[in-house]
Length: 450
Ligand SMILES: Cc1cc2nc3c(=O)[nH]c(=O)nc-3n(C[C@H](O)[C@H](O)[C@H](O)COP(=O)(O)O)c2cc1C
Ligand code: SF4
Image (cartoon, rainbow, N blue to C red; front, top):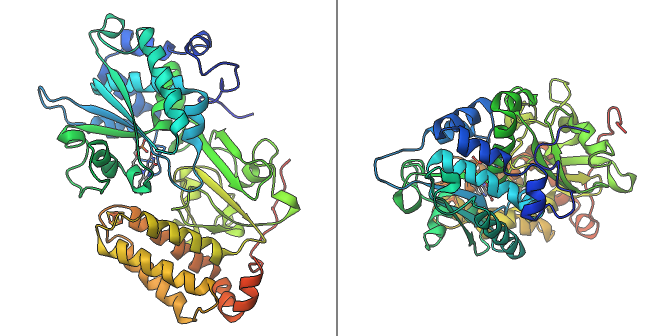
């Protein structure tokens, strides 16, 4: 069993309730932080921990916090990003649903560290039942003196508000989220200015992911230094992975980032191997936006080294032979899956979710979707493959927000690694339509771990 910092208590009966959470050691970190630490020492502790943002980009959290502008007399805000709409990603939902006080405790400590008296949780609209769970946890925390005025006699006031989104993926992008929170259409803002300087209602704002903010609790409990000893290199602490697709045990797992990809897929402790004894064909290791990897490049890097479940190892080889840790949405595809069909689904999603502000993304995602529909309907042409390649190439890096890149990368990686499957789809159009079938890109595990 690996180290558990976030989900250690998740199976304790009633842990959703304040009394049980408190009995199990909850709110110790909040008490320590508010009674014995200054806001600056908390920021230093988070810096020491090496914690990187768990929302996708992996930006160092302590560094982000230290950028927060502090003009005299201007309120600052902390906003928790609970939008979680990236296909394949469902770890924040798990954390909020089963151990909500961990997030609330993390928010209290972080709000104190950043000087946020009004903190917001912006949550995906479809998570309606979790809103009730969070609001109950907030009520309980307030009734027990952890929120409201003069918390623990420190003079610090804090309220937490939950705001539901309306079902747009783009509202997970931090500046679109802020627009939406202000009551406007969720269009991303041009940066700079960054939220740390002009965020919510033009006030200095930090936006962090649910898991990032929950991780502040163990950091304060065990110290940043001890947290940094868990994991490897710049992948410190633990990471939640939501695993899905053709595996025996889909679910949310907490890993300490030292295990290999192969162990994660085949060990009974984690995914339990490929379903129905099939062979592994490919995997998207970090949510739908990151490049797909064929099995041979997933289990080993291009240099033939073991690939591990951490930021550095998953991105080894860049986008040519590597991918990204991203949001931790681990999507496994077996030998029967068709890469063209799979990528077509993603292309359709990104077209639908583009906010339409910039033409490379608005037009490019639409063109890619139409070409995929042509391929899927059996009317594809060989030139469509290069056309797709050129469109994605011209989207990447040319848009206001990273949704454009997120739409381009899956298409680029699918063509890069599975070009022959695209060709087969065109030359065997009828067969491709009648059979949910792909070419044999699978790889057998190198050493099956049990
Ligand atoms: C299209 C798009 C969707 C995003 N969705 C989410 C999301 O649902 N949750 C999240 O935490 N970050 C999401 N992000 C990343 C946020 O913009 C931001 O980087 C993150 O909330 C910062 O938190 P962190 O530093 O704790 O990772 C998204 C980014 C983009 C471009
Ligand atoms: S990249 Fe796409 S989603 Fe982002 S601002 Fe431009 S059009 Fe909107």
